[in-house]
Every structure is written in structure tokens, then in C-alpha cells.
Image (tube, rainbow, N blue to C red; front, side):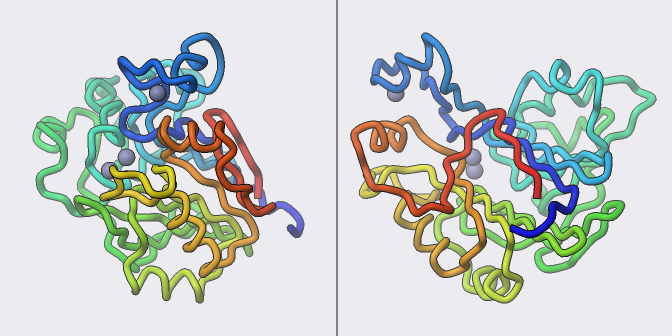
Length: 257
Ligand SMILES: [Zn+2]
Ligand SMILES: [Zn+2]
Ligand SMILES: [Zn+2]
């Protein structure tokens, strides 16, 4: 990779909707996680560019603690599933002098009463697929994904660096794949929820699907996220050696590009 541009991504959560440890599960992965490391919280990240921070998804319910000293400036939501928005349910009743812009797909239902009783959160500025926006010096192009409800992935460009953040999705819509093949992300962050051959594959990639997307788009580096205890178990039992530039994201991992 060439010289770093000053863009930093920190994974705040890398788990699927149930997370790791999974409630009531006594598999080896979940049992070990209760004893120590390896926790996977709701899938989310913090993107920082020249001191300006954007929270990507808000599934963590401890956002007040995490960002007490250094708050983010805006929130981008991929979609309105609970594991991506539940942290907003009490963030909305924050200091009334604040107004926090929350950008996401135009989904009239939102989640429960979040849009109706939005408190300090401003949901008015929705994002449209392939309509590019600028947030300070960062350019953002939303792209549609394949999921059980309206979901956007985000392609961020800063200087010559391009980062695509794509979760939750199963495969990619043809127009998104065409765009990404042309746009050529430096780094791709991708949904890889299930173990190969899992019976529960419906709205998320399994590992093989994620690797196929990787092979078609060919970023310099890929980070797999939204990971289930089932996929962790597959790795634990020696499943599939990953190519060199394929990384498994963990909570707290940070990279600069
Ligand atoms: Zn999810
Ligand atoms: Zn488990
Ligand atoms: Zn989802």
C-alpha cells in the first residue's frame, strides 16, 4: 500500500445480530468468550478523517460511555435493523443543546418509534443510492445492498484512498458490483456472517460468498465482519486457509489507510 492518507477505521463491533457470546450457547467459542477475549458486539465502526469522526451504525448500547470525551460528528446508518440502531434509543434523549445528524436510507418505518420520537437525532437528510455526498473532506457514495430490508453500503473517498463498507448483504446487486469493479476500493469491509454451507444463510454472506465478492472486486485488502459464532467455530476446527490479504476483523481493531 502507498503512503497513508489520514483515514482511520476502528471496528467497534464485528458480530452478527446475536453476537458472541451468544445467549444460552455453550459452544467452545461462546464459553471461551465468557472467560476472556473474543467478544463480538453489534456490527459498527468509527471512521475518522482529519479529526472529523463518523459513527457507522449504532448497535452498541454503550455509546455514551464510549464517546463521552471525544464525540463523533454524525452517524451513518446502513439500515434500520435493531442490531444496527439500538444504541440510538437512549442517545436520542441526550443534551438538548445538541443536534446529531443521522443519515441513512429513506426507510419510512425506521425502527419502533425512533423516527417519530427522535429527540436530538436529526433523520431528515436521507441518502440515495449512487448520489454522492461530501461530509467535510470525505466523499461518500451510498450503494444498494441485498438484505431483508432497504440497506445501503458506503463507499468513502479521501484523497486517493477508497474504502467500501458493505454490511449487511447477501451477494451484491448487479449495479453495486459493476460500480465497485470500476471504483476499485483500496480496502473492502464485508459481511461474512455464516460458515460455508450453513443452513441459516438467507440475508447475509457465508464465507465462500464473501470470498467470491473479494475475487471479483479485487481490493488491496479485505476485512470480514458481522461474524457469527458458527463461523468462528468453523475456523476453530481448521476450516479454509484465507488468502493473505483477507483479514478477520475483531472488536477494537483499527487500521489507517
Ligand atoms: Zn446486522
Ligand atoms: Zn456459541
Ligand atoms: Zn440487518
